[in-house]
Length: 447
Image 1 (cartoon, rainbow, N blue to C red):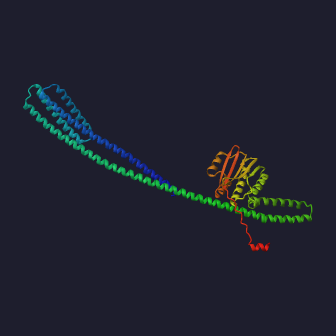
Image 2: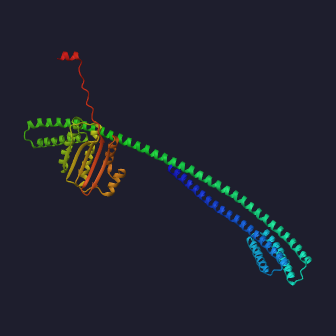
């Protein structure tokens, strides 16, 4: 698997762990909410049992007050208390409907409660009939007490059952919450580790790509340097070999012409030789102009612009500020190649009849500007050129690499009025060769 595929696999695993942690979080919150609901349910059952006990006590107390005082107004309150007892019992039965044990307790509690209510009704009826005696009421009270004890026993068992259920649910929920929390933390940790690994892999890929780009740029710079060396070599060979041979041939034919004056074929050969010598010299100078090494940018620019104007028919306005100064050989060569490539593009693509070339220095930079008055560069092509240097052909790419190699840059601007290419390179002046001085004794001898 490639490094890109491994990085994607690590990222996918990290996303899966994040989804797992999210699911764990969801289930943890659901379980926590369920636990809270069960705790509240237990509290509701306990509250209903407390209310039931309270209503039983109140009904018994009101029964005792009526039996002792005979106040009929107490009976309505006692009847309401009995209704509340039955309502509380119904509520307990509904709340514990999911528990078989508690339902059995509720049935026993209902039987005991109805028996207790019947005893209280019997005691009240006996008092209302006027036949109530201490002995009869005491007997009923004893039965009510026994029923109360039975009620308390059932309620205690129900309370114990609710406490047991609550403890069991809390332990189960605590264990589940611990497991879910462990899964959540583990998933988050693994996702974080995988994200860090993915980031490191991406960083390694970026570094590898940067190293490849640097190697590519170094290779491009080396190829451009070799290209310049080959051009210089070919120019020298054309001038020293082919040029000299053509010149010797011209001398020989000129001698022949003196022996056969006015011979048309000889005259044609002389003219063809003159043209060939001129073309050879032009090609040699275009490959590597000797003026660039001997006289600098001023002379080389003027020679190239004049020749270009003659060959292309494009009027070129050349402006050079402080053309007498010399720069490093690499700077002068890069600027001359930029001029060559730019004017060639103007001739091939712009359709312009006029161009402006300006060479200036500003803020430590040498600035070469070539502007045409043609149709301009299409917007899509211009965007690609500014973004990554594509769509500009080999010439612009080579120009950009040459400038980058010596710390410069290339800017391209275009519009309906035409296009402008601006090359900026750091201004590094050429160091003048040291003049060797003779020793004093030698000066005296020569003098």
